[in-house]
Image 1: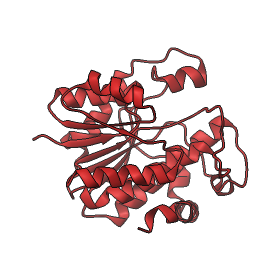
Image 2 (image 1 turned 45 degrees about the horizontal axis):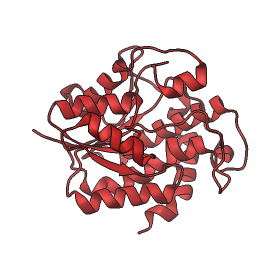
Image 3 (image 1 turned 90 degrees about the vertical axis):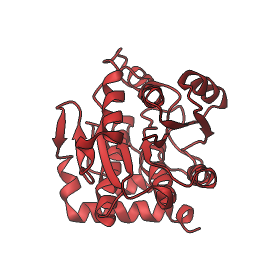
Image 4 (image 1 turned 90 degrees about the horizontal axis):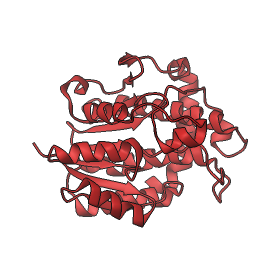
Length: 264
């Protein structure tokens, strides 16, 4: 059965590879990116009538507008893959003084997911790109009140993403499924090259697990789980994700920071 699938950050790396893989199987793929030029090139490469959707996910209003645009054009979205992410940036703060890692890696996908939920069926899936790098969240830093080093912000943003994944699963026991996935450490992506200065491992490792998480039966009952592709199994995220007080603080901050984009 042909599925409609939105992939953020789909103009390069494992996002683009995943899009190519899914389109080759006959699925209708919606590609997100920041650059109009890169999106056009990606759509040509993916083929199969792939759609191009531009938005800067460091701006939460653009994440909301992306969701609204997709809803206006599509009555059903079977899978949302929140793949876009950032580790290092020339300007680590948004104009509002927020750390761009928290905005792009945690908050924008939350806004996008919440606004797209009305068209994601109960049997649909939301696949969130987590990481082996996870750390307890400094809520003050997420709120823009404290500065963090690049890797600190990245690791905390990925745990925050994993936390809201499990909390959305609890809030929607009838579906869709919400799944956090570490696609594999040090894959050969632009982020890894810029952040660590290494060539990295075959990015197809990541694309394959995203495809499986999006479509395969092994993930059909995996809502609220975290899959670690380094070990090839479902695993426990950072222990802070099981600390009810920490989870409540993180979720309260996420709700406060995204409230203006979720009201309408």
